[in-house]
Amino acid sequence: MSSLHQRLVDAITAKLATVTTANGYFTDVGSAVLVHFPVEQQQNILPSVSFADTTSTWDFLNGMTYARRLTCEIVGVVAAGTATGVRAREVEADLVAALWNDGDRTWGGLCEYSEITESELLVAQREQAIGGARCSLEITFHHLVRNANLS
Image (cartoon, rainbow, N blue to C red; front, side, top):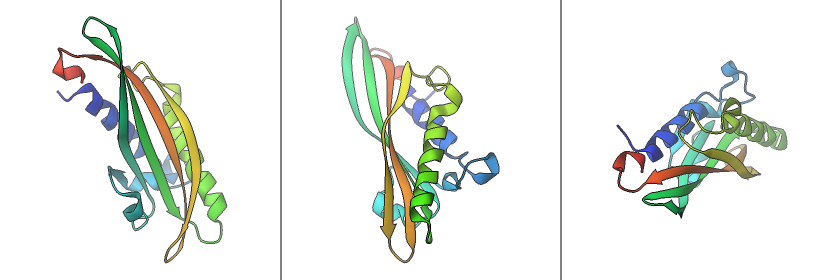
């Protein structure tokens, strides 16, 4: 069995993979889910969404139990053409909808709580106009230090 941390990453990236127009979203950023992929290179894979769990903080609760807050960065990008702002807002709406996880803020009971702490629109010009969005997701879960399965 994988660690709790890995199971959370797997649940989130699986949900991001559902972000397609066939599933009722505005964009198809879920057609390519990239984990810990450089954002600069992500612009060469359109549409796509990248996921990176970036920082953790730990708070002692009791005994061997800690509350762990994990921060994740999710970036979705699409080719935008002349509607860069519109496409960026569509990506943001899709990421927020997916990360809201149908109202299940515990990701199937894997964590205590998750919330989107910020989002921003992204635009770039390379061979074509690119629109996108970045969302920060903070996840709180309990970590029992003596049990490697919960790390």
